[in-house]
Image (tube, rainbow, N blue to C red; front, side, top):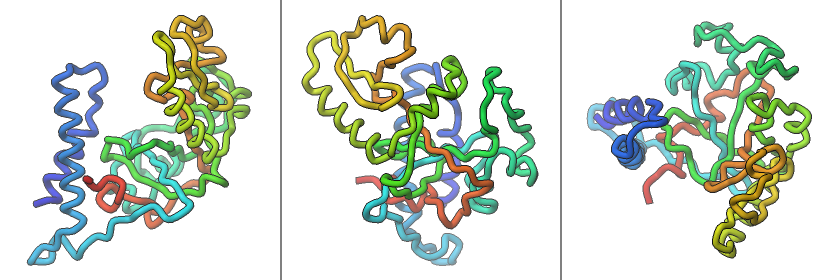
Length: 254
């Protein structure tokens, strides 16, 4: 029963509610909390008839590592990842896992760019994403690098800047914490901004023209800029190396 309730909530959480009403947002947030409870129940439940299986051990983050996340998109599902592993778009298309054709090489926004369909993207966040259509991966922050995804195609089209924004994940996390501390000292009218190439935080007036241009400095009311991404140039990350929602200790309710 827990399994079926979880799958129903997972489907609800997968719906894109951008631009929806505050009432829908409240339902979404509540569903996320309820789902985390069911995930914890699922991880510890053992059914009498053996359908649910034995207890699932929650996976904590090993010492010295941090957990990063990939939100499954382009028609993918958790069940597919359990079977095939986490695939690049090209690999998923070749295997018939998705019918969506990969983005042609060098075609994104007319910018010369490495084939994004041959990369797997993850993101570091202070807490797990609300979407249950996501998987975690434990990495060493001292050997893993992030880049500013806003500089990759889109409205900035700055491939040189994207490469220049390469930052050690450990440093990025430290600067995010530095920004949180700095936010406690802000004067009225100030906000925290992050350098899009170094991720270094600084205080700036909300009417600063640099924030309007978004060419060098980008505002970060919720610490989303510099928005990080971690790329893996492999066709597949095996399922055994991933952390699924029902076994993620970071998702367990307090």
